[in-house]
Length: 358
Image (cartoon, rainbow, N blue to C red; front, side, top):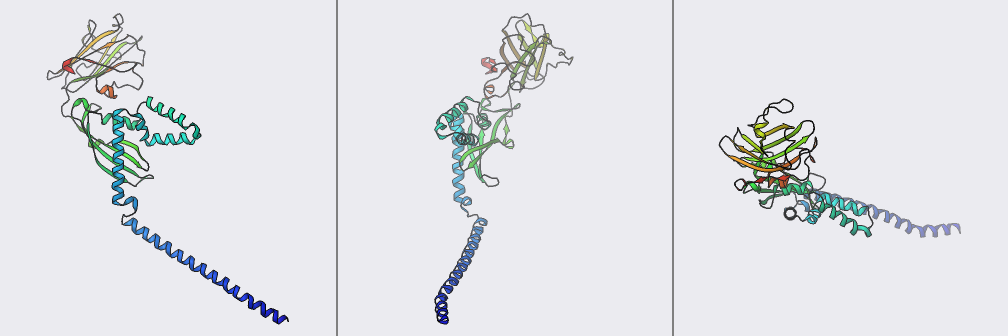
């Protein structure tokens, strides 16, 4: 009886044991098949990469990214030129990072309110450094065009470098860099590839060209006065041919002639340089203010320039100045007196120019 039961049991379990072994065998075969597929896939991907046919590197894809980035640059430049602050913010990588942070730190119910506050604040604030660069080097009167767009994969986020050449047809349109007026320049825009936003704008100094002849111009002036050392006036000119001859008439006095010699520290003042420094001590304390002044300069070839301005009050304090500069460059923040930011009292005023000097 025992032998019969054992025979029946073994006979019934044998197929089950064989089925389990078959399942394990099929699993091993499937795992081997997957391993081979992965190896083939990796080999194919490697071949695509080295042949330059991965999607992000295909010629068609590169052309598409370049065209899209160039369009973003055109929109950005147009927004800066027209003063469209909302579009400037929408195309700025840094601004969009800030907006993303605002959304992360606020419930969705508050997004409309906090984002409106952000856009309003941006509209009232000075342009950021990238928009300011565009405003400075691509003013509305300038001729510019995109010359090249190049996809760059060398950093953590893919970017497209867009190059723009700018030409300035007149001195009034030209940016003033130091004491040089540019005739042409090249700007580089770095555009993130996803999403398409302006990351950076730089001027490539190697692409600068300058105007050959700069007419004689008084570029800026400043005045400061305090109780100990008295009043001081600095004027700065560019262009023309040295040596220069200055004349500064304030009220009934010619400051360039009446107060030449040495400054308050005993250093000789050279009135033939492009920078005129007048230290008049306390001699101007009894004059009536506002004090009208006219400054003239003549160079070695007989060229002249004359500007007029008015000193509002005598005293400014030790670190503050009344400042004047020549338009239109002063309106772009160029050609201003060389002073720390915030040293000019109020807005830098424009020189008054005669019709012959405009």
